[in-house]
Each structure stands twice: as C-alpha cells, then as structure tokens.
Length: 495
Image 1 (spheres, rainbow, N blue to C red):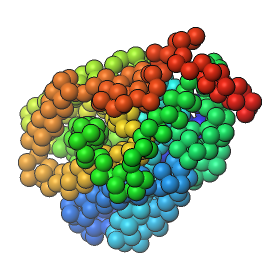
Image 2: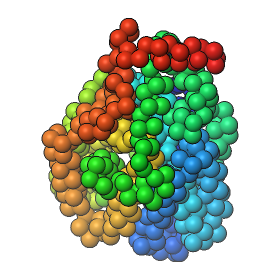
Image 3: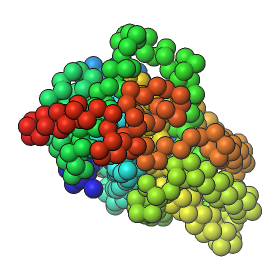
Image 4: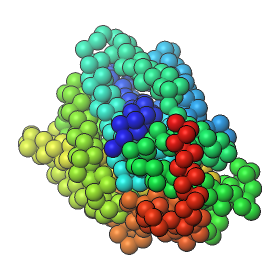
C-alpha cells in the first residue's frame, strides 16, 4: 500500500477525529453534575434542554450538509474540509466559554455544522485518492479516527471529574480545539482530488497527483486510470447542466433514486442501530442499572476503548477481505441480538437492585455492542455510500445521506430522554426492530462493490461506462494502445 496515500488520508481523517471528540465529549459533559447545575439550575435536570444540547448539534450537521456538496464541487474537497476545521474550532471555543445554556447550544450547533461538512466531504476525498483494492481499509481510517476521538473524549471527560467547579467540564470541552485546528492546517499540505482536477480540466496537475498516489501500481495502471476517469467524467457531463439544483434533482430521478435511497438508508440505520443513543446517554443507561457519578464516567472511558478495539479488528480482518454486504447484514443481526439481551437484562435488573450480577452483565453487553458496532459499521457506513454515486453526484449525494442521518439523530436526541423517563427498558425494542429490518435489506438488495473502481461501480446500476472496467483491462490488450502509451509518457514527463 502506498505510504503517501495513507499519510494524506490520515491527515484528512483528522476530520473523523474531530467528529469523534465532538460527539463523544457531550456524553461525559452531561454526566458532570457541575455542568447540569450551571446549565439547568439547582434541580440539575431539564430533559428538553438536555435533548436540545444534543439535537442542535445534529441540526447543525443537517445544515452543514446543504452547502458541502456545492462547495466541494466548486471550491474543491480540500478547501471545503479546511473551512470545516475552522468552523469546528469556533464552535468548540463557544462551548468552552459558554455563559448560559443558549451559548452552549449555539456552540454545539456551529460544531455540528462543521461535522456535517466533514462527514459529507472527508469520505469522498479519501475514496477518490484510494486504489480500489484498498478502499475499504483507507476509507476505514476515518472510522478509526472517529473511534480514537471518541475514546479520548471519554477519558478527557473522566479526567475532568478530578477538577474543581466549572473546570470539570470547561477544560474537556476545550480539548475539542486542537484536533479541529490541526485539520485546518493539514489541508494546506495535501493534494487536490485527482477526479476534481480532471473535472476542472486541470489535466497536468491531475496526472501528477495520480502518479504520486499510484506510482507503485505501474505505468500502465496510471495511464489506464487517468483515461478511465477522464472519459467517464466527460461522458457524465454530456447533456447535463452543471447547475447545483439540477444536480440535486437528479438524485431523485429514476436513474439515481435507488442509489440515493440506499445511501440514505445506510447512514440513517447507523443511527437507528442504537449506537448514538447509547453513546450520548450512557450516563442515563448506567444509572438505570445502579452506576452514577465518577463510576459512571469511568465506565464511559472503558466503553470508549471497545470502539477502538473493534475498529482495529475491522482494519485487520474485515476491510477489503469480507464482502461489503456480508459485513453489513452480519453486523445488523449481531446488534439485534445484543440489544435483545440488553433489553432482557434491563427489565430484570432495574436501578436499585441488590443483585449486582445483572447490572454488570448489562454493562458487559453494552461493551460487546460497542465492539460489534465498530467492527461492522463504524467504517462501512461511510465506505459503501460514497461508492454508490457517479462523480458529479458524489458530494451532493453523500451530503444528502448525511442530512438524513442528522435528521434521524435529531429525532432520537429529542425523544430519548423522554422515552427513558416514561418507558425505560422498553425503548430498546425500537432498535431491535430497526436492526432486523436493516439486516433483511442488506442481505437481499444491497449490491456488492468490493474491489471495484468508483467508475466501475456505476455499471452495477446500469450506467454506461466510457471505457472498459479498469480491473478488466489487461496489459497488451488495451482498446487504444497509442492513447495509453502517450498518456503514460505524459505522466512520466510530468513527474
């Protein structure tokens, strides 16, 4: 694997780290009583405001997706990610200095806008610089960074419990700033996406970037890849408007609606798997089985490690080894079983129970659930959606999918505190049903995309390809040897 691709992918995947820290830090922040008293008054409880702090972050994500597709196509993936890093820094600063709950919500909203852009554009950039055979692994770097960010956020939150007064939650919130700042700075040292350069007809720059990215694949591969990308983008341009709104309408046309709905379904089901609810409201779940205060924060810190371990297992044993479809339907079935067990344990061992074996078992299965989610979904829910769209719809399409994810998260953030107060452990039944439905969909209707180039995948949905699939072109059997040879020489000279 080309080390240069890995390095620039890690730089861009800092966006995943930013998202992991931003989304993870709120779980421990809500667990600090000093924060609850400062924001909600002496009672330290206010379910609607607590839900608003979480849901406005998700609302920000939804807003961030609106302009991300246009910006990524107009100004490049690179500089769009840079702007997201700047916005994340501003949002984190607002949270750190929050003087009342409105300022806190505003900070979460701005950070959410930044993360909406990050989640829409970072997977696109990484996928467009990755070779087909390693795309699952390299795009999975974003999932790895999300896990690392979430794990670090949990331990920062736990460490905050040893501080005094408002420092318990202000210092942890300030720890969101370094990652966002590094992301913005790192964008000055990465190349443009070669597909974006080709779309802008900046061919010499594109050839130089392709040579740098895939020089280890051989001269023929580089020439073939350049020709396939160039011809496919040219074919997609024929007879279509470059207007953003027209492109948005295309997502719902008969030709692309299956891809659009599949991408939205995968990311929405990532939320309806129950992962975000368990992540954001851990302290409430732990209190239902009798663990509160600093003990709850310590359990949250250990919980963060499970996601990291699961993501590492994905990188080593699943990425580009298992078919995408098998990974997703197996994962959905696994989570369905885990949540069924959690539901049974929570019903039999409520808060205040004298038998500690039940609560301990419930926490153990929450940990196993976290490991399983990271293993099967943390990366794959980004790998598959970004593979589904042609170039001219890729940024807009993934942005719409992230928007659907954010809307789903908003609804869950608002109803979860109220549901936990009123129906308790029965709330798990929702996620049992959604995971079962997802497994059914993935098994019967999701096409397999592993190992195919982004251009080749379009053929799975009936699109016409401008050239033969890259993986099927053999050395010495090209359709236009002269064109390939001349392009190879041009790439060579561009170096």
